[in-house]
Length: 213
Image (cartoon, rainbow, N blue to C red; front, side, top):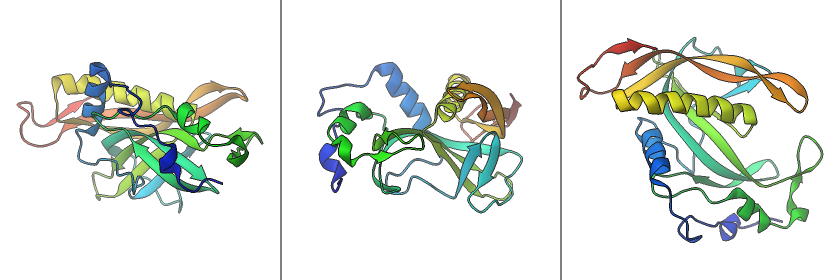
């Protein structure tokens, strides 16, 4: 049984790894926002889920038509008995440990079964973002470890990274949608963040105001 996951951690420095300059810039861009990930409380506000293309919250509360992306992050979570035992958030100068190395340190007999009935590695890589209701100041968190989540996250992150070369304080306002994707079970609908427009946060940008996507 897993009792102390921190003993299974392998940090980037301990493993003798250094983070590439290009990846460091990506992490810096992801963290240069108004909401940052906290390992002790990764979920902030209402948790958003997208199942078969349908977006919902835990309480099925109405979701605003558009949301401002206030932060993006990657993290590793260790699960046991449907609870998170440990969490490691990627930081600017501290790359995430290799999840395969972390899982290799935990006996497979301690792994729980996944939805497919097969042993599921305790450490899971997750992709997430913080979204704000820019009309009522509500806060939402999207967080998942699925392939669909990774695809949607990387697509959005690439757009944010590109825009920050032109306007460092720009943040996208997105509409939650879905896109078809191929899976082992056939074609399904995965999450999608459609950028409606960009806004400039703060007053240091010479092009302060809003710009269309």
